[in-house]
Length: 374
Image 1 (spheres, rainbow, N blue to C red):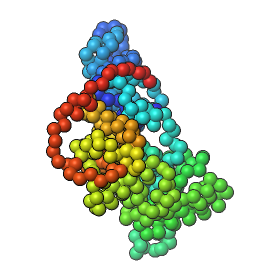
Image 2 (cartoon, rainbow, N blue to C red):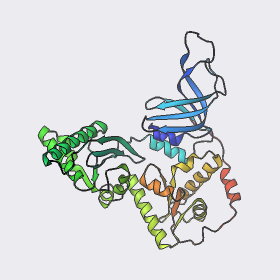
Image 3 (cartoon, rainbow, N blue to C red):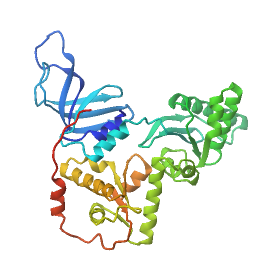
């Protein structure tokens, strides 16, 4: 399981068992002060560190052993390929099951490589259905244009060579995958030509195929934030129209188009969207719910169940429910709207009028408890 998915799956009050390294507070073996053991904790918080590829899960110990007492606070460091056991105290609702299903998929299937670059800077990324990962950042000094052109050409070749070697080392191209090259000016175009020339010089068919399949896109800079505009470009949406993140970008574009028309078929914010869903207006015939995954990580269980109920009602009515990641451009745009929005199948006006929602909140908070182990 990818740790990013695990971070979305593990919530407050869940129970998790994993390997831990712990200093002993008991005099079990005076010659040893550090022990390897399995700990079971009740989760209070999580912190995902993408750079170190670690997930830190904190909580209180609920199963005593020779080295720890019940109630002690501990942080488990989860790493890739290190097993753990998870119990969901409040049950495996539809969103948790969908997150688990996504986690079991291979991120490499359909993932897109991207290099956002300018002279002397290259950001190498992997774009999966669920998030954008910065794999490596390449920096190289390029002589100024006022210097001799041969010096600058030599500097660009060194930069391209460093970028290409880092790209093939960071991302697996053993199976063909789309490659986006984005830059201001002609840097990306020149880099694609460099890849093709190197493939010919080395007789490397993989490099030749990489250059042939690469899509060159204009960006305003070579910095990482420019990837957002790249993902919205017509070249990218045409080439990768079936990918999940591309569909979500189009949904967000359609949503903002509806907002500008002010035709009553686009609403955002928990209150208005929840009312529209209750009325069946986000169902069969074009209804789309857009909701950020961060809303399902609320420390308040009743709040989480409220959003799960909204997702379930949309699915029951035949609408489409999209859980967006705040790591993607579309999720960041949705964050600015409060993390939830909807495209309606028919117009409704005045959904933002106040009303007493206490009864609905209480109804959504009622659910049975079940447990499941992964």
